[in-house]
Length: 285
Image 1 (cartoon, rainbow, N blue to C red):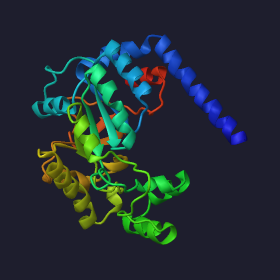
Image 2 (image 1 turned 90 degrees about the horizontal axis):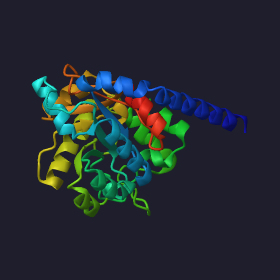
Image 3 (image 1 turned 135 degrees about the vertical axis):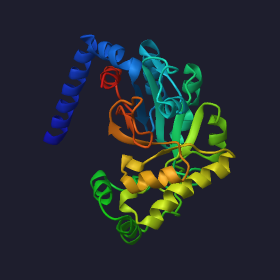
């Protein structure tokens, strides 16, 4: 009970701070000052359509939503002159089944979102491995070698990456086809391990294998990658670059300028349930 009250108090304090930042005009001031030379990337997972609709409606009043390709092309040229001021890229991670409900919202606002897919989970009834665990156990398994994580899932919970569940968790192939005009599908590994905790062979399979999986499915090259949980070392960067990707996204907080490493793209963190006040504050950095 006490813990719940504390969490509620912290959430209320944050929302109050976000509201003050927005009401003060600071959010718009920062956007005007930083926007012409920086691009933000938002990261969602499974936002409700009504939340994303509110967010995109607000974005239209303060800036522009651009495709990830546009940002990466500017980085390649080291020239943002062709990118509208106060631009933001919308990305969505994993390929959750609920993402299909966002199609009408994306169409209404004319936004092409980049959806990073776990390529051996979409189109199947396999689970996202963390959905079988409580948060504390998930956090622990995100800090151990990948082989130990998989052994724990098999021996303690009877789960393997290939196992299927009754209720589908990820987008189907049919839903991917429906969304193709308003979503740029790109790889997010095959099974979403924490890459620095994988051995060399596992790491290459997850990165290079997911690229091959998705290119075979889509019939086109894949240009962008997202590190699961943003975790990466120089090894992952080199594998991604050698695989032929043009960019890779982390979850490191910050703006992207012409000097940003395209294989270490930064993000403006946002929660799937964030209020407009929180969105405004995050867009202000």
